[in-house]
Every structure is written in C-alpha cells, then in structure tokens.
Length: 215
Image 1 (tube, rainbow, N blue to C red):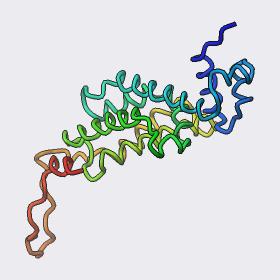
Image 2 (image 1 turned 180 degrees about the horizontal axis):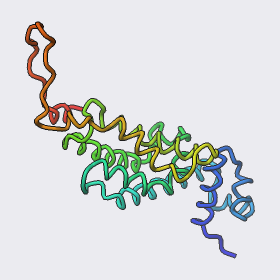
Image 3 (image 1 turned 45 degrees about the horizontal axis):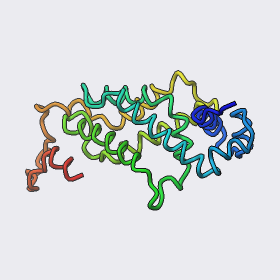
C-alpha cells in the first residue's frame, strides 16, 4: 500500500507538538507505518524536522494571506492573524524549540518572509498612530511568536482552555502595543511643565513617522 508522505508528515507534527522528544520509532508508530518506511521518506530526525519546518512555513504564509494584513485597522488585522494561525500554533511551538533551524547558513528564508510581513503590519499600525512607537516592529513580531508558542504549550498541557487561546494572546499583545487613546488623538495637548518650572529648552522631538523609519 502506498504511503501518503503528507499524511505521515502531519501525523509526525501531531505527535511532536505533544511530545517534542519523541523518537523516530514513536513517530512511525503514530503514523501507522514501520520504521523502515519512515526512513525511506525521511532519512533521520533532522530531515523530518526540516520537512516539518517547510510545512510550518507554508501554513504560516497561508494564515498571513487569509488574515488580510493590509486591510482595515491594524489591531483588527492582528486579531485576524491570531485566529488564522491558531491551527498551526502547536507545530510552530515545536519548531520554535528547534534551535538548529535558526542558526548558521541553513536558515530557511521563509522565516524572513514571514517576519517581514508581520513587522510591516506593526509598522503600519505605528504610522497610523494605533501602536506605540517605542516598541520596534521586530520586538512586537517576536513577542507575537512567543505568545503563540506559549499559548500552544498552555493548551497542550491542560493549563489553558482552547477557547481562551485567541483572546489571551490578542489581549496580552495589544494591551502592551496599543497607544493610549490620548496619545492617538492629534489634538491631544503635550505635557505641561510643573508650576514655576522653566519652559523646557530641549529641541523639538522627531515626528512619530521619522522615529519609526529609523527603527
């Protein structure tokens, strides 16, 4: 009987997201095939992990497309992104722990594409005045990945309910990223000197847009 490679890969992903230290024998058993059959598809654990990486990147990019990151308010796009990427969160959490994927010259450029697209979303929100400008897009992007991985581990361990996944991640992230309403208003007055204090002599600060461009 022919073995569906994609089915084997998804079976391996389901197991490794629950048990990252699973052996190749355990992966083969979970997929319902022999160790020899698994070896014909993936020469070893490293080859399997690289194939899972390609699957994870493909699922991330599909989620980015479905989230329509360029449409509407930036916070709403973040909410759509978390919703669309949730099914892949367990796999991403596993890949997040595989340090060899992010070291050396063998870095898959798919990760760079994903980082750039998410960073562009946070930068758009900064330019529109929705997100704070003291947090760089790169930091916000890494914070999102960290929350997605942590959320997946919480659900897998039973410490968190699946129904809370999206709400907890979105609220934690946006709770730190959103600018206060007063700071978003173009008519909001600036800080006033304390009574009897001399007027500040500092030069005018850079505009938000110029600070974002420099970051």
